[in-house]
Amino acid sequence: MEVLTLGVTHVLKPDILELLGGLAVLVAFCVLAGLLLQVIGSARDARRFPPPGQLVDVGGHRLHIYCMGGGTPAVVMESGFPGSSLSWTFVQPELAGFTHVCSYDRAGLGWSDAGIMPRSSRQIVEELHALLLNAKIEGPFVLVGHSFGTFTVRLYASTYPGDVMGMVLLDPIHPSEWLEMTEAEARKLTGAIRLSRYGALLARLGVARLISILVRLGVPELARTSISLLTGGTLADAERMIAPLAKLPSELRPIIAAMWTHPKFFDAIVSQAEALPQSAAQVAASGDYGDIPLVVISARSSSPSQVKGHEALAHLSSQGKHIVASKSGHWIQLDEPDLVVVSIREVVESVRCRSRTT
View 1 (spheres, rainbow, N blue to C red):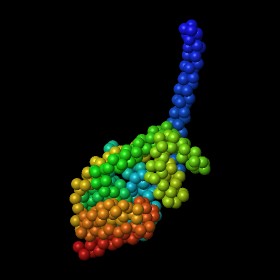
View 2 (tube, rainbow, N blue to C red):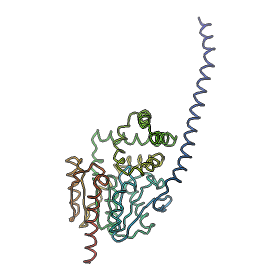
View 3 (cartoon, helix red, strand yellow):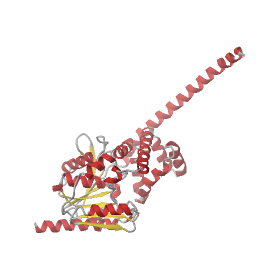
View 4 (cartoon, rainbow, N blue to C red):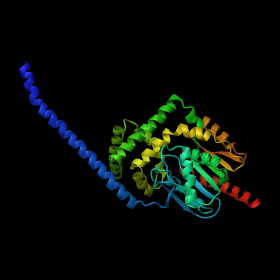
């Protein structure tokens, strides 16, 4: 029996080693092919989708800023995540009809370079300040923020109060949501971070780009199945995060798809999510906003506790106002852009009226 066992082992061992060697070669080939696909695809994206605005150095990396229109005060818009300057597509041209307006991409997002880590609100504020100075955008400003972007707007207003004359906050997140997280909320945040880490890995290996190609070729179900398998079933979280962007014009979707195949995008999202408690603490310590014009807009889908927080936020200025967007989900600038434009115009006119009387 021992002789027989040794004989079988002797016969199988070379076969097993050969099989493992073949698998290793196959894996190495797939990795190299994916890396090559990513390099070629990134170069192609840069040619197909040049930035509409300018890239401005903010101290070692460049941020993309896109401005149009004329007049004062300048309106500067800050997106939520995973949004970019494209999130303001329906709003920015309308604002340009009566004032100077700029949208921009935070580091790692859109057309901007990857930036310094961690991506806390304090870091983002300092980069935005450098961007506005170096791009020679004259203040004071009316700042507009959506979701996570409202942290930037609020912290900027308290850090540089002389530069901010008004604010509009769309469905803002509240510091307490991240400083006093329930177990379920902590799991949700952990899931979002895990999803983005998967995305960064898949982007580096070219898999995210391959999935994007499958979507463009008209086989979205295969793409969905691939994502679900590769991300350990976190597809549902991803769909909830990106579904509203389908409301953007169809001609912008290939641009967004290209942006979301770059590792810098996922790295930025991971760092912003990991820094949320730190960012929340920074904003919570920022104080009130005196008497500057402030409009806080809640989504129809906001919970009663969120609406209560939004009302309290509006009261941080003696000229604060709270309204509910009755036809909107979380992405108010996509669901009710007219309401957003009207609210921003109201703040702009209030700032102009003050300037005429001083």
